[in-house]
Image (cartoon, rainbow, N blue to C red; front, side):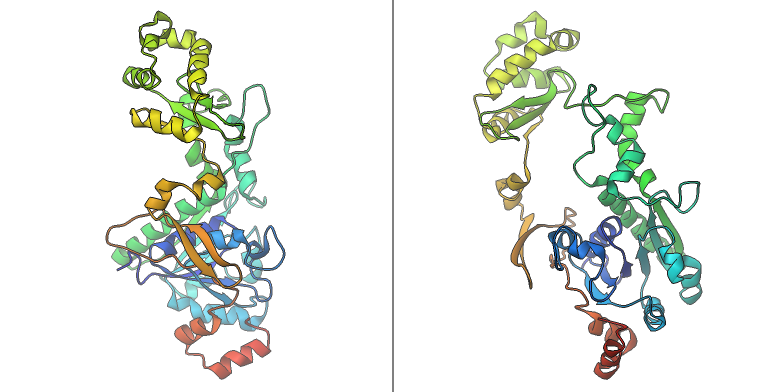
Length: 396
């Protein structure tokens, strides 16, 4: 049985932070019903291309059902509130003032559904002098300090590539929702959950804040690509932009294993390269020796030799490598699913593997695909009633 079988979530999210949270819960077996405006749906559906069902939307909305309701119409808002008691959780991540304009805040919904778990994501939270600022992933990365420690010291701040402010906030929101659901099972009480993207992103900054800033006493430097010869990036054979190997060595045993894997035991006995201060003082010279070796191999060959010797390292996977990786293929992580508009597409599956909870990966739903199904399930709507709502353009 799926771990969250029986949990029902009314998902009024858009873009990524909220959708990442509800997708994670859907992967664990929750019944997630995504509510979108008719005609165009949420903005992520067409992000990056014309039409609907963009790769971006598909990436963040698998395993959900979709209904299309016009919440700007009084009948649409009433329909949503009629559905509400059939759900355990309501989730939204709209910008400042949008939910208030729709009059769908926590206090309104709590009156209708007293044990509701109401979860929301806001860029800077709903209180404080910056609560009215609009925030998206890159803004939260800037506001959390992440950009300040990314890049080289002689260059400007740099944005980390992954959308970790959005998806990272979503992951934390999913954890909070699961915790609140368990608490409700024990106490019978619902509650309000709020995540600030700025605060959530600072979770991923804790190591840098603690070790490189001493909890804000001074400014942490940019990290660049590494720290000396034993924690750094090395070029491999080939001229591609990602033909590199990253090596990270933290003790003498690993250093000796690296030297032996390179067939360079002479480096171990070289006093310049004894583990500790000597290596630090002669980092540039050692880096040249390691780079001479890595340039003789392509990045996968170099990884197999070095990692096979017990040294933490990885080739730099580009996005094409990931979808052709024998290891991920062997684990069944990359899966083929059928999409009505795109045909067969390859998607990463859920990284959460529970031995007693298995949920099949399902492609993201089409706009309004389950509107009648959900209204019939929740409110007993007949085909005629559903057609009347379509004619009034309340649903799509």
